[in-house]
Image 1 (cartoon, one colour):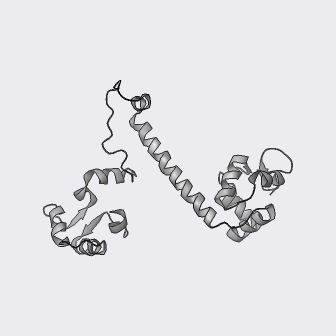
Image 2 (spheres, one colour):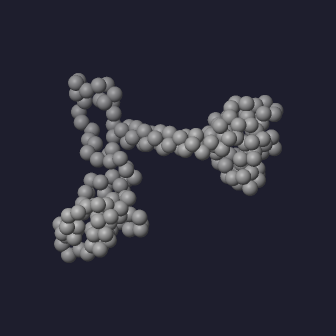
Image 3 (cartoon, helix red, strand yellow):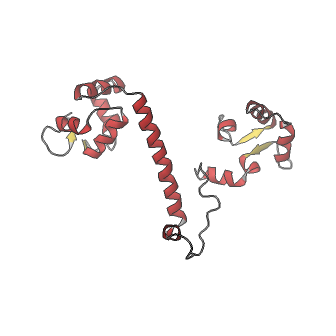
Length: 190
């Protein structure tokens, strides 16, 4: 549904749109008849909820993997593993979100590896930032100090440097930038 019918930003589809998209997907059956099977009485459009109500509910929650569909808290059973007995809906939902986030991070890391910008030294990192943001002040504000507090901890810096494509030793880069050994880097040190 998301790939074929939501590209125009609408949540509903007219018959002509449906017939064209279904044909584009390669379905060889009577797509007009299929549309009318799903069409509610008196309506001119169909939506995902007409085809699959549970999928529509999950989509409205942002649950693209449909983890929350059919999840019920049941009485614990001695036959269930401890973790499963302790799992609540919110824990299951959070677990699914973490797995999704981990997948996105792995995809980002892979794309950064593939697009290795070659920045491995402090000078190359600054050139990379200037190329991306125009100057180091903009790079600091828009690419590094996302929280806007005027300083970077090592954890913040490490995450930002990797996200920007730095492929050298972040510890060496940090040591070079944290000239006063305060444990934080400021724009003045940068």
